[in-house]
Length: 404
Image (cartoon, rainbow, N blue to C red; front, side):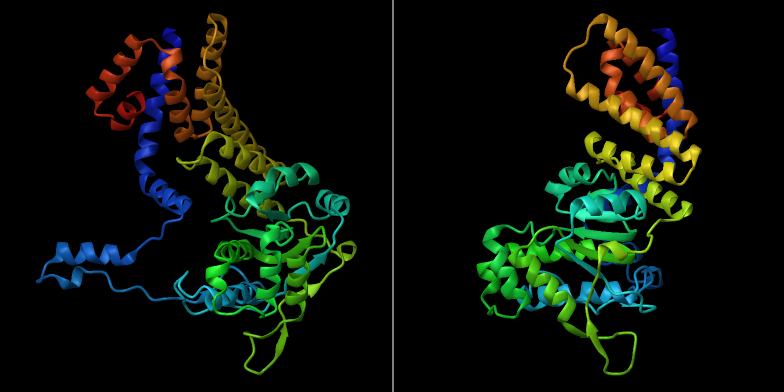
């Protein structure tokens, strides 16, 4: 037990400095995860209060609004704008209307796959489209992940804040509730009147979700529907026939939002090693967010491990594997209510070795989570109090919080 205590104490001390230096990043990530907006007006309000009447030069200037999108190209942004127009027209009070984003270059329009065979899509994801990300309704994501045998399947809400080189939005329209299928068809065909907002308020949420899904894509975007549906058929027709102005030209050129595609004629969408690494790091960072529950964190880390393996990066792969082991061990404690003496003995050794491994991998935040999760089972009240008093004596607030 003494060896275990020493490991715990060493782990806590190693983590404290790291936690202090990353507080701002953690708060920013948490705000992003919870979907709250950063309000610059609040910061200016504080500045006015602090500066008083004699030091107005200290108040930050109002930020400029930039509507040039440096991430996605015009082909994707034009598609997103078309759905935003529906949101503004039929749900005018739902969002604040800003100027539309403009891409720096034109880029390829989204592709449409209608009545795609799941077995064919699964083969393509396994062979020539390994880097493509599938976005679907959050409730359906686990089922599609298993059906396609592809780890890079996300729920749309789950993917908020992330970005991917290639995105396939799968069965979004087909999975719209049957009671809203005709409403969606009429919306896309312009048959609905001004009372649409009152009759079908849930469509507002759908429009926001599809906008979120579209804007996750950087280079390539596809809509895929595996079955025929009223809303799906209408959406595929609307996407490939609705004429919109080309925002990258000064002439009055119009073109459809998307194009019909044949799945069997797709060129390779394989990502480079660097792109796989970037995607893996994005997933690992989501798993490390303080408000991500263990089950969701494990899902992010499974995807990170897949990406790091494809990138052939053993360093990041080892780090992600250790992180996943810790998350699974924390989840094990949450699921099991009691342990035998023999099980506790084994767990004590396992946790101690994993704490040391997490420190070596520079995963201090996860180290503290693991320690806090298991301390009551593996340490006696006397040892916890001793560590707590020592932390207070050294002025270590993060360690004190962890042991409270």
